[in-house]
View 1 (cartoon, helix red, strand yellow):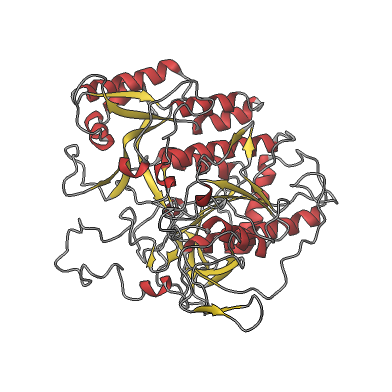
View 2: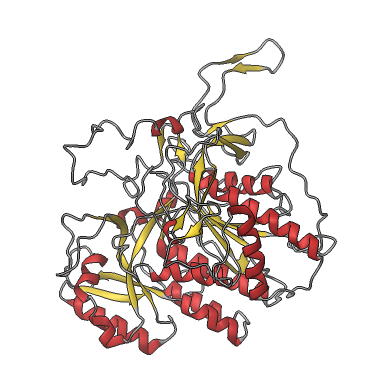
Length: 582
């Protein structure tokens, strides 16, 4: 495994956090899978569903991290329950850094009031100093505390697990959900193993899914592009977000593995590792081993074996799709996770908070930031209690805040071929897609000032729905997502070799078969709803550009939040058929 597997708060004394922290175990060692058959639960509650979470962290929403008195009350209540297990509870220092970032963002009172509720915090659960203790388990602690915290710390406080989110495109020789139990719909704890029609030697939950992982059937493989590069209609202005004639370029934030080097994806097209007030929006640390850093989430599983990581090239592929559909757009390439393709929810929340600050500063006219038009997310997880109305307040609250300030949030539906809700995809409104245009299923409404989360399933090249694509009333629409062609980092090459390679007859000539994991040509084929989502994101950006061309130039802070939501709705209606209902 590449070193990115240790990401997730593993750094000592994170810059700006105000204190040193002891080094942590790699993130993958801190992950626990919640087993419905054995999980502790409070009486009267149904058994939880399976999920993966960080065992030693709890997320808190409803209390600002810099409110010392309220934070102290929450910690004290959890400490009482944790003491029985010889565990201690402390605040994650990184959340204090983000709270300070918001305070020095230079926002007016209205913008500050909009952002503040989205800034919760994390708590670390660890063995108490000098006392023997079993490994911390956030689930056990949350179930033990139950609803008693409200009486002590006040209404509106929500505690939740720190879920593990996974990116899951189809990668040769196995789809990404195979070797990683976090998204496998049939893990070893399957309550009905004996009737499972697929024996244990079948790593795929349904016949046919494996095909998408093979070269020639949609799996990650190199191809040659012979057509012209996408061309911008507008010349560049003095800033990356403005054209020479003063038109605002659509800004698409891609929180993913980053974007590697490619002739199409120059620095005027892609803003790599964007920052807000000197802090990177993407919290993923750059690998120290240059062999593992192609600016796109890692390059090799290990230096001694050299195979490509499961999602190496993921962010570059997505950026290329956005660029093909809207060449005039600007892509904010924020490094969210590495080549293994998973991230702790806590890290994702920190990046989303920084993106929110960047966006609000842009709306306020600060020269170092600009408003974000579209957010593309290609990750997901299953929640243990989706029937709980407040089941995932931290993540949902941040996405709601971004949407209500004019950002179109586009997410992938997931690749399990499963109707069970996957999140954040299932944050989208339930729709009746049997009618045209699709309409919300009551009690859902679509407010004019509240553009919805848009969830995208995948289509095959012939227009049929891809077998792997998740589906349900929470899937907004479908876009091309199988056997797509897009960009790869020109530095991306794994250890596999052509089946035949020899010296040619001309001086310096080499002859051979196709190298299956050499992407130095810059292009490849891949499949997954991970890529259907940015197709819709690019379409939305193209509509926004057309509308801004019609309106003409406007000032740096020439659009209000209300007008941004109106713009977003115009693009959503044209691309998906959805319309506001209230």
